[in-house]
Length: 277
Image 1 (tube, rainbow, N blue to C red):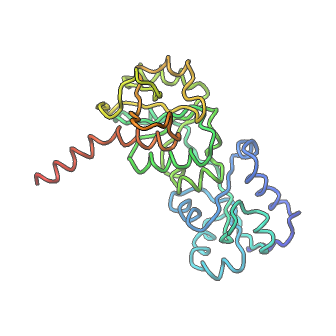
Image 2: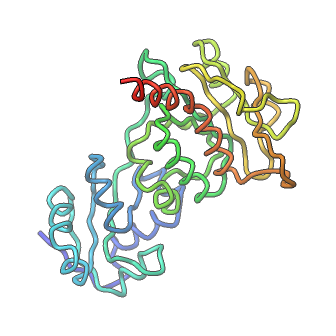
Image 3: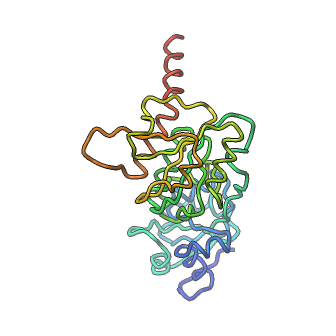
């Protein structure tokens, strides 16, 4: 049954709006919102549970087959007026499609998921949703085994994180830990090589390193970097050589360089093997 809503005062609309705006409410309800046709279809393809589908009449005409596809698996299907969609949306030019989804069941810790070696990216207190989204997108593109995040990182279900990740949130394994230094200590006991990324000439240049298959790199807060406690929990320190005049890099940029260096040797070996065939 398709429900039609034209008022912002409707309880479903209030619930969706609060999910859009409040990280705390998202955690309490274990739900999050996805906006835009591409992300909604990514959610479907990734088998995310769709609680409610909201769409305008214009969107239904423009994306008829896609709306039908999402509507088939959504528990509720709601047609809203353009003014209600504008109220709900977090973007300047909304496509008129919006889903309320159930939080992903990713409770298993990324470094305990199986016995296979995996490279892990750890993040301490990343605050900018755009940075986190870009980092997750890059980690997925580089084939990183998983992302470990401190509780102090911004909400991974923030609409800005979801958009910036281009759906990577749905696909890449991630774990949120209450005590990142303790998690790093546990990783070392499991045989991981753990490296903290710092802007220091005393640290090992990342460009000259060879990362074992079972390794992790830790990236810190945009303004403050890694805490001393986190640095002490790392087995070694790495840095990105910067011959220019800049003193530091954007967190997402730094993470992208570190991620590439973690996997570069794998790609080089693969390219060499392909060339010898």
